[in-house]
Length: 84
Image (cartoon, rainbow, N blue to C red; front, side, top):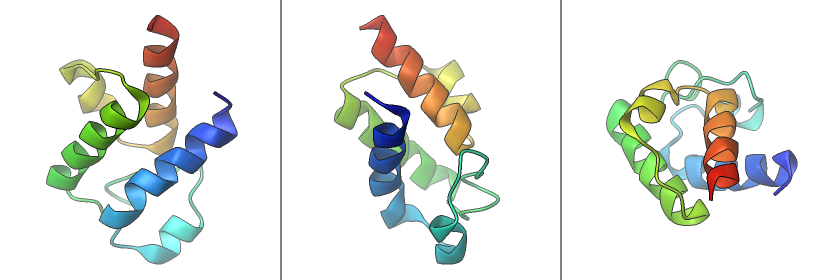
């Protein structure tokens, strides 16, 4: 899966939880889920569960703790996909 497609899918999953629509429109790899998009930690868990379902992967606790930005999420997803 290409990085562009990964970002598109990630945006689709994240969108319902975003509190700052302006930041969402300007989403980049540097975007932080909590500080920029104003996603709370409970919703971040929902996003991780949605990502697991979408990509048929399992995200371990250590990876969850590091999944705070678009860039880190993409890296974790890519790593998990390459393991399968």
